[in-house]
Image (cartoon, rainbow, N blue to C red; front, side, top):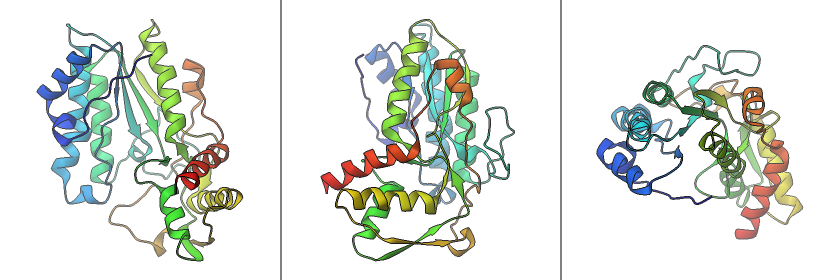
Length: 270
């Protein structure tokens, strides 16, 4: 499988003409739409930017992929933030959405735009993403542990920590299936197996780091109210991923094993 990556600058992520030209030039068998405005709190003061990328940009990608001259499936990466977090059980794809902030609403609008524009639009909702790259929770915890003995971490929000490395493997598997005759449309949940609070996740990160000589710290468990943010986070971000497993035979590994893999890479790098 050959992968062609387009640019990530804002124009590519939101301008329909630029998007269409880039996709047409690549001549793909399937399009993976991963561009997003992900600064959750900043989106409250930049709603136009979030709307341009998360909603209009996502729709433009789907329109370009569905165009008669190309006509290939599109896989769109989405988020657990479309839910309000009040359900006591893990969310399934058919549950009622309830976004509360600008980021949440624009991501939901992006899902809707993709499904409206493309008869083979596959929306993959994921959650609590971390990786050896970019800005994410795992890297933040290790950075904090390098200069302090204790870190305060929220313990009353629960979800599925999900390695971007696992997401990449899963996306390739789904892309291969839809490009080779298994065309479908719909929403699927794609998250790490097992659940944790942010505090649980932090403790697992520090345990993995300690095992390979990296920085570690004690975790002080706090409530969401003790660490207010401009935008409310869902108390429950757990996603039920059975539909993805049944439809594509894809289920992500246990989050603890994936955490160890990512932390080892981060410690070795730094």
